[in-house]
Length: 78
Image (cartoon, rainbow, N blue to C red):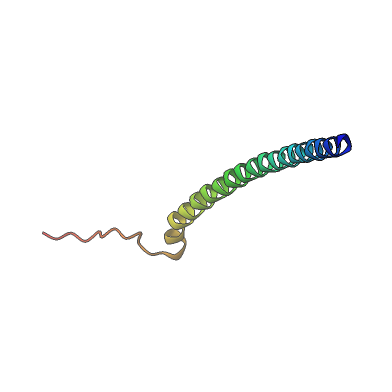
């Protein structure tokens, strides 16, 4: 009887401690994942912004190189 009570108490305690360890490990992994996701999103955003500016600069420079108009009509109608 006492053996069974001690056995069930120990099982319950071990189970609770393993659950706590597992939760702490999962929380640590989630925090790490959140930090990595934030860092990745910031880097991708900055790369996208840089690419946007490069493409805008290229779109401004290309007509001068090719010798075409930029889309403005210079015809005078009267």
